[in-house]
Length: 391
View 1: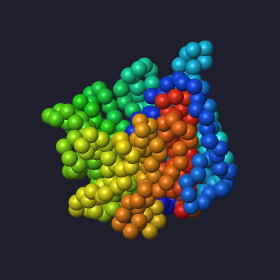
View 2: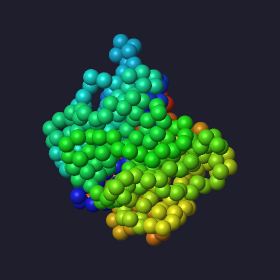
View 3: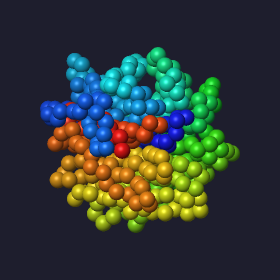
View 4: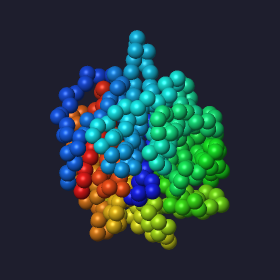
């Protein structure tokens, strides 16, 4: 989630480490990018670092102001033919994106961000110890450097998102693959602890997005595999100050439904986004919880193939932004949508090349400018992708 507030702004979205799917391939030519400070009413690509020689991707973005933003993800290189994936963090200073060093003693990636202030930024992700082995990863930026912070060493665990109300009230969510369940952790200002999560009878359960309105009102969204039908179902849980409980959530149709992000504006205005299989292709999905019921909103699903919304952010005066991708002629293309006056509408976004282009996260700064991040040509030599708009 991203909520438009000067206090703290965070970003959202793909619930998996996109860099894990990158493969070596000749790089595609990149189009010219706009000047960094040239922000206007249309999306423009801003150059961003791609240090990995095999692949790079950005999973989350956060904007504290128009001159202070962060994005995190992963980079992959192969020095001496040795495949290596490292965490990636880049910072925007109002003029350029620059890589900022993160701990490098392990293989892993970052997928969630929460910023309290310029000197208090948190990132979560995964440490990888094999093709399928992982542990949750938490890192912190104190204004001068990133460092790894101790967190529960949960085998086969991954963290995908983080959000909070202050530096002493932060949530992180993800998945545990053995025994299977959703993963919820909390930071109280001194230590990270695992928190009891509702049980779901499933072979796979994942929370991909989390948002916190107050210390006694937080939401998380994801999906689980229904053992009875073999399809994925939407999953939403809510924290009321005492514990997390399942929230009854509708599915669209009888096929796969997956939620990837959540934006909680207030107790009667909570949004979740993802996709749902309708017929023979995935369509974008956006639902709003109004305090007593869910409302399924119509959202554009362009292209001839699958579409998805991976990230959502709340803006001023009841507006919302959502980002993701749609498939056209077998290639993913960037997708951005804007909500105003009770309707979602598509907004033209750019693609960095003719290959695959995906957006995973969106953030709105207190100054009103909007960032979207992801990856271009992620099935070849993936490059980070950052787009900027000042509506």
